[in-house]
Each structure stands twice: as C-alpha cells, then as structure tokens.
Image 1: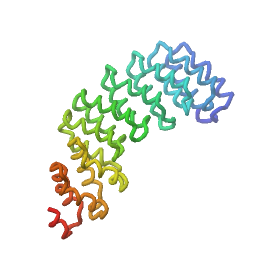
Image 2: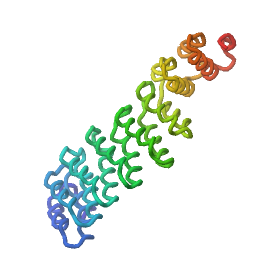
Image 3: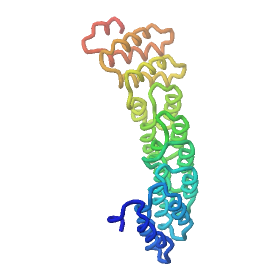
Image 4: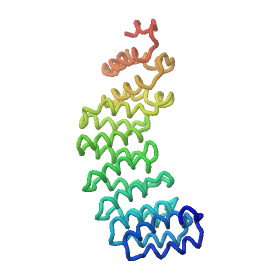
Length: 284
C-alpha cells in the first residue's frame, strides 16, 4: 500500500488507521510504519492518532510510534516535542534511544527545549543512551552554544575513557574558535583528560579560518596560562605559513613583560613563518 498510495491519500489513510489499534502487536507496529508514510505530514489528526500509541503496552510498538511521529511532524511543533520528550523516561532503552534520535532529526528546527531534553539524557542509567545523547547534541545545538558545550564538558569530566572520546567528538562539532568562554571550558578538560590533550587542541582548531585566528591572537596574553597555551596551539595549527598579519602580531610578543607569553611567542613563530624567513633569527 505504501508503494502505490501517495502521501495524504484519504483511502489509504482510512484503510491503515484502524490497524494502528489492532489486537495483534505485530500488526500495530507495521501499521504505524505504514501510517507514517501514507498520512500527510503535519496532519494533526494523524499525529494525534499516532501519539496515543505512545502509551501502548508493547515497547516495540511505542518505539514505532516515536519513529512515526518523527516522520509525520516534520517541524515538530511544541506538543509533539512534549510527547517525544516524555518518552525519554520510558522504561525501555530502545524507546528512549528512538526518542533522542527523533528530537535530533536533521529536518527539525533547533531550539532550547529540544537541547535541554537531549542534555537531560546524559544522566541516563544506560551507557548506550548517554552515548546517543552525546552524539545528538551537536545536531540540536547551534555552533558555539555555550550551554551545550558546558554540558558535554561537564559530562566528559566524570565519565569513563570510552565515553569521554565520544564527548570530545561532540565538542569538535560544537566549538567555535576564538570564543574565549569556549576556550576556557575546553581547556578545563586538559587536567581531567590529559591523554586527550592533542584531540582537544585539534577540536579548538577545527573549522578555523583567518578570522578565527585573528580572534584567537589576543588570547595569547590571557591571564590563564592554559588558555594562552591553547591559543598558541590553535594559531600554529590554523595559520598559513607566512601569514604576514599574524606573524607581525606574534613577533611583538617575545619582548612581552610576562615571560610566559614571551616563551609562547618564541615557540609559535617557527611554526608559522615561511621556511627560510630571515626575520626568524632576529626574533629568536
């Protein structure tokens, strides 16, 4: 039926709708999948009909209902988000996982309610759910979202090594280079995850541009030495060899009154000047 009927076809919808309440659980699951394909997207009656299946006694049927809601309510209005969010407390982990994936669907609009719901799953008792949530957060948060980055970093500080790597993957997708608060939060992980220092620094440099390098330059003289060191690494990774404006800015720092800043500058300069640049000798 789903192959021959167009979405929104009333005959197909009327034929499948009663099967969603069928006595046989297998029929209900198949009917929910079919209903999500033949009913028109945004059809409030269809969404209400599927939402009722969230209360089904069968876990796989509840999961099918979550999947169907995700397909029917493309933009997921508030009432649909509320329904799916409630499923994050389901006793079955497969339903909880499907709910996270529905909230993180690529077709939905990012908003705070969706982000808060997914972040709440970082305290789930099941590691699979926590990992699903970590990987979903970049899909529901805007680039540089400080609440999202803070939640992931807080999780990374207290989780196990395997989960921490998943968290750092999420950080890589969220960080915005040159944002001082982002640098502060990420650098806070350098002590709790010493084995991941290189990955964290690469996360800071991910997606960087000339503009982000310019924004990172002032952080070389930051009062927090870790932020200064991270900024130096970011510059060394993202600046093109021979970038005159960056080189000119960094070349003023070897004479800085703070010896820590001066040492950073001396360490960075050889990594950003072009090979054979005669000025390097005078700077060093």
